[in-house]
Image 1 (cartoon, rainbow, N blue to C red):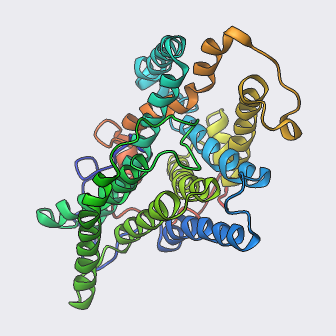
Image 2 (image 1 turned 90 degrees about the horizontal axis):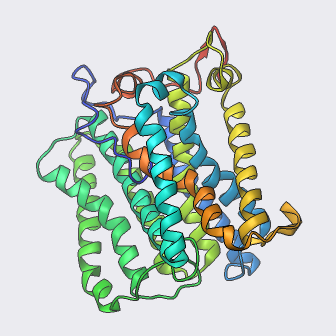
Length: 387
């Protein structure tokens, strides 16, 4: 469920039979806390290590690039294929969409890259930004639906809080270009814009988030149900986006706070869908992964991510010969090759706007609807162990 995706209140209806006093969890209390809180704590722990070690302002070390970028960011992109291209029923259901988007994306990418490589990366960067902004909103909306949170002003406040937590740091970033980090390549963001815009809107940023926190505290103090998962997503999003973009001017800081809280929850979501939609008797990679457990899916994702980064480094970047070996000079073929290598990301951004919509995915509705058993890690089935 990434930036362009939305599992919102218009997509996932609350279960009338759910107990009102119970705090809603998407997967389970333990898994939700590890997924959202754990990914944030991991990113902050890595920041602390970098700070104490004196390499917070150094280039991203190879081991951290492998773990965070290749192992999480690139890998989570390919997790989308488990929802689409490795599910024959889903692929057959919307073949035009699932094959048309990559084809149109590649043709558009080639045309744009031929015209301007900078504008190719700029448009891809803003597509990624939209994708990253929309994902936290999707989590909040799903928690709202499962918790049957009231509409009206509280819904408006929830939406404002999660959007201001991501959009204001982006305004600040655009007002303080260049930074020690970029989304993809240097100068992929347009600007700078006047820094006064971020300064003028800072009180709005602080005010909305403070009001959101005050409402949660009031609900807790008055004995009313607090949607802990929703509050956790808003809190962790606010913390990681502020620390990684505003507070620290560091490629290390931006990378770990950007990719870990974004990619790890998505991988958990995809595994949850696989676990709730077993295919033990049907041949295919998804069925095999369901039989073997989540480590099998992670192994597949890491293998594909390594292959993608090998192709990038050998033909375009030439930055990590220790990991990928020597490269080749593709010359004028870059305008054909770069859009092809970027196609998994672009397809992931676009398709996520469709594959997590409940109204167009009746089976997904059954898998994620409120009130259903979500103990995905503790359950066992006749087909094999789910570890």
